Image 1 (tube, rainbow, N blue to C red):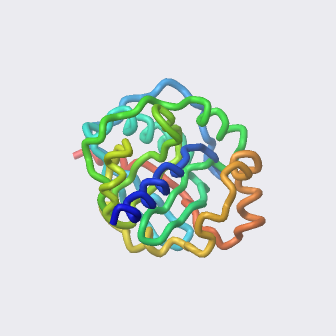
Image 2: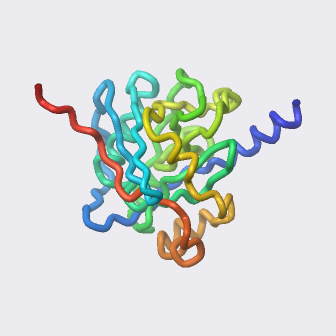
Length: 212
């Protein structure tokens, strides 16, 4: 039991945070001062596997992380981002932008940590890290209850509200093979060439509230 926990803990340490994206028909905006996110909002991910995923986010769960996530989505950062790390029965990870120059801007602007107030249960979304105060743009969605990540400082801030079946259907054939360093340096050009069947986010956007 202890060895299994240690194994998962070691895996969690390697949930490295970084950033990369290729925006096609929408311009991706540069890093600016964080805008405060609404208290609650929803984000839609349109996936390459023809699925649509709705994520419900609550700012009180991780204010710094949620403000950062809100800004990333509003700037179209996650459009065309590949799911470059898929570990069945653990996590699916994404958030390296396909444009290396844009990726570097966000990677060089990490945010401080939030305390863990919301457990890493199945379907929750969380920033990946490479140590203390290193969150940038990489995210992961838990494919099962991973409460052991709570003690490692991973502050979940939202949950998949609809479409978890599409998250679970993301192509896992490449596992953890893609080299994050190459993704950062070469962007989606590297991923498209070496991993042509890799799933990705076609479009990510905040659901705007309709006026009553």
